[in-house]
Image (cartoon, rainbow, N blue to C red; front, side, top):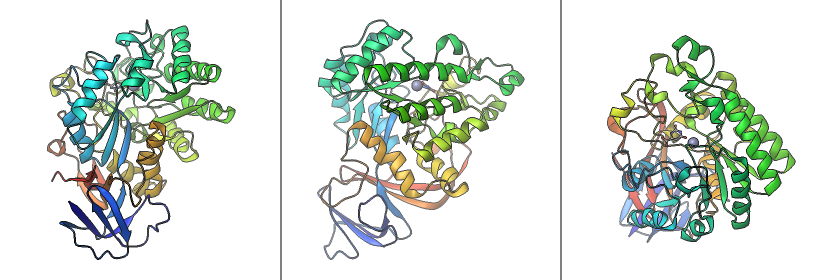
Length: 426
Ligand code: DOR
Ligand code: ZN
């Protein structure tokens, strides 16, 4: 099976100029040639005129809901959503039922994923049952294929348990992913604490709930030497704490989601539950800090926190509805619209670094995040100029709870090639 992409500009390929129009030949799933012209005949030919070929995106934070919540998303529907959005690899969070706290759940997920031309990295839990009481068998999780652990959705409250978890993580060279939220401070909150929550009469989650949790985990990471990754950073205070810790040499990395980079708590004015996410959407000052953090390297990457939920659940009263927005199918377009087109803050090469190369490095999966002769073809073909409106019927995900519905975006993934297979959903 051979594919020839012609007249395409290539970004994210060492030594290749982004200005040249090139031909890229893929043979048996491998990038066989990148050149001004390729004489070989291919079975499938794709015209890349006006388009860019970039490394397939890599997401460190997605919820595929299997096992246990297959009515929201499965490994298969999650992978299709990912491929639709230009992703070739995702780390899936362990807040499933049963949670991913032992080898058999990991193996089960990997077995399902092996049937799809896509890369899935299951994240194990930190504690058994995600209860925050007893440590999961991390060595077993690692042997089964986990590269990271997290109790995502929950913060590990017990500082001593966290210390022990980080000691193991350090010994086993895993990544400790923290959902940094002090529950005593955020308890019962449903949105950001501030003027808007007062106006709407909704209980707030203050910035300090994140800041306190981040500060503790940074302290423990410094003492234990663990590699700590702060998930979905949302506050200016967390950005400053992480920046200072990095300067001190703490092994910390961080991610931010497109929704936290784009929307403020004002988006909740109509009580639209698709904007109910955890951590909550914050304020303009926070967005400003998050963007500065991305530009100066304090925040390493953009992750989706793709969190599918059923329509019936999202239709509940604001206070009752679950937290979460889907993200895999809009992340690239949303980042491009806001930070490339509108603000001119990031180049396409920056976006490739933040959404592909750097997350791949943090996963320890150096085979992703670049385009090079001789490696497997895991790439996305993108149209930077395509203007479109996000509609419910666009999604491959089993759930449609996207906070981007109705938004006009500029830029779209045309197709994704994963393990050498072409995925085009239109
Ligand atoms: O908004 C969120 N949804 N934040 C989380 O931390 C968990 C996630 C979920 O699992 O739905
Ligand atoms: Zn989380």
